Image 1 (tube, rainbow, N blue to C red):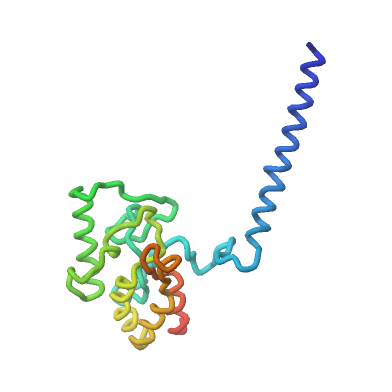
Image 2 (cartoon, rainbow, N blue to C red):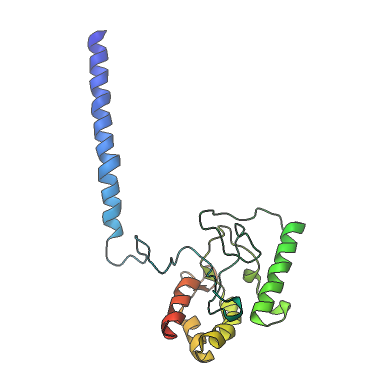
Length: 198
């Protein structure tokens, strides 16, 4: 009985050591090594400017002179449009006929229309509805085009140059037919700020 207990204890201890080395040292080092392979599209360490995979809505120091393109609203935002709480991911989980959701969409539509100086009917759907994660960095080309005139006016860049930056930041459909074209807001804002010399 005692010899069986010793044998099982020794086997369990060896297994603990092997799994600790494999899962606690070898696997993390392998993942870290793969993240350093050339050609991977996203940096594993992030960036000081922001992330192209997490949509953080920029906040202008002066809302009347807002030089930024904006992301979709987030369900985690304290206000109607944002900014989002990036520590929380998730949608509102409200049904399409929810009066709270319909009120929020109407408030967002009015706020975006006022900010961009257009009629509420001109505001695209993704400007007033949150993504499933609430942290989507992409907007539709229509929403980017809606914001281009304001960004050009505030930054002093020619309208055609801002629209060209939007075109360059636009990604087509995945594999040519999946999904819709998107514009990454973080990358677009960085390009605009660089072009404006800020």
